[in-house]
Length: 88
Length: 342
Image (cartoon, rainbow over all chains, first blue to last red; front, top):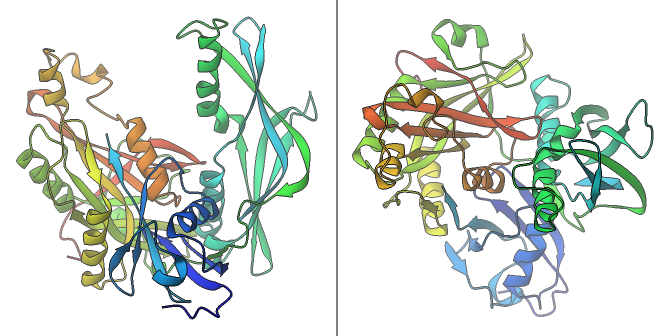
């Protein structure tokens, strides 16, 4: 868990292909995971009409949108944005 | 990230030149950016860091009408002290124009299916936009292996139209055979997976090319007109790719179109004469298919392969990829003989 004294966290976010990776060093710990997804979807210019789940690689689990960034992540964590999307 | 000092506007006209109206053109610039990055890498103009290079977007004014009327735009990227540029025409805005035309159809100013024209204009804005915020894009862990393109071409046969703008893609016959068997096993339902393989660089060209070595199947069953790539399936695919430990790259995805089942469901009879002109039987990449390629595989080397399970027992393949920022049907090389990476 993140130290409550930490002012911001550094997180690295990848798409599922592993071919696009973005890092932010100024993620506010009080932000929710849902808000974090919104920020990274915009930063990576991913389509915002697609639902994404966040997978935390260190714990090999999907993180809930309502969790606080400070509770879910450690600074330096790597997460993957996994879209729920259909081929037609 | 991408910096732009202009806002773009679409103007729509009826075929006879009558002005319909003006709409904001919030284009998706990522495909243009990725095409510029990949072209720089392909031609040996920039190092691998080009895949994370920041970029700027500049309008190219129409030679006769001048500013603010566009002939196209340029994307410029820089890495390692060097710069590369790619030009795009206003054809890049065609999809946006089609979407905008619906607004005029709803207003009764344009009829459904009526031909219209469009023009693009750009106006300076202050300060320039950069949607990246505080994010830093990092170069991907992309393995590019040295190889001779000529040696690949010697044991391959071209399939479809080979456009010089497209980078060469080699599909082993053994892989297509596997996809054919998976498609036939799921007859009437969509099936698919992720294409993995290797990128190669031939400094003699210079040219980049790809060989799709294998596929990771999507577990579970699709539906007649839909195949879901859920977070759980992505986790399985990522785990399978990691287990292979072969420095492979996700090249794109494949899925089947059970066209025969679609026709049966609609009570349509098919005959050999109608198949060549059928819009669904060959080279059909739906709006959902395009959205998936854009969302998951926006890199300009990415591919979408469709297995067309046609009526009358025929089965064919259609390959799609990025060309100047647009998704297009493209040709490939069928690689005979043993897959060296199997």
